[in-house]
Length: 315
Image 1 (spheres, rainbow, N blue to C red):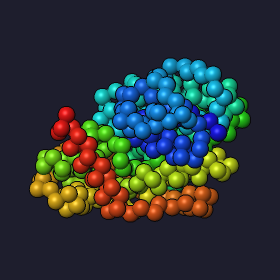
Image 2 (cartoon, rainbow, N blue to C red):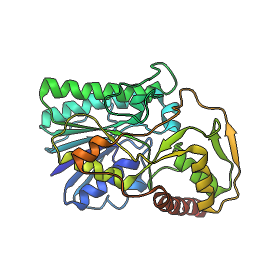
Image 3 (spheres, rainbow, N blue to C red):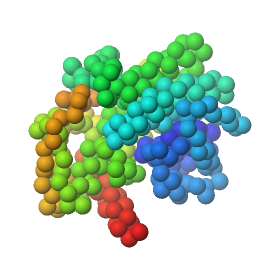
């Protein structure tokens, strides 16, 4: 098996590349290193079954190898990046998906799209089922990410219907774990880094908004299970265990023994009030559900960030 993984040096992509290599597959990793890092794939670079191509997937990609699976994970998925690079975010989601689908069609490969819970926007139903069409502001500051993923899904299903490409689409809910960036901008990494540095924990609004957090190992397991089925419609992948943001902040403060204080900031534009997946379909179709609880996942993630910050201190 040969798999091509776009965004392979990113948070999710690097974990997927490692698991595919462990399964004995050949992996072609494509990344332009805007948000991915060489650190994430450092141990894979010398592996004979691993190949790195430095490339911006919003530009056409030509490769000689035949491929069995195209995993399209290239995306500026964190608020820090998509707010700083809104046009690049749209290009990776729309042009990148178009280029990947074209390559999958040429190579006769199966296509996996890493979509997102953000396609539901500030959801008016709770929890969110796959049949919900969403409540998205198409011109807001978050629209570059939300609409790029909605458009990516539309492109994927257009190619499926027109060219009979085998597709899998995962709507990924909040995921966390090792290999996240220090400046990632997502809530778990933000809170952990701030707590470890002794900085104020920045909570938006009053912290009453809720999220559901899935540990990276559980997500990767679900992705691999999806590839072993013939189910083509979108599947929610996430952990339905819900927590208020203020409670998450206090939990991280406790687990890091931090003296940081909580500082409340204005709520960002179009920030969803609730985010919780209905994973009934994933349970029945994939025989999958998350196994790693929040505290265990946070313990592993805190250990990772302690190491990263210690390395930075010693540079």
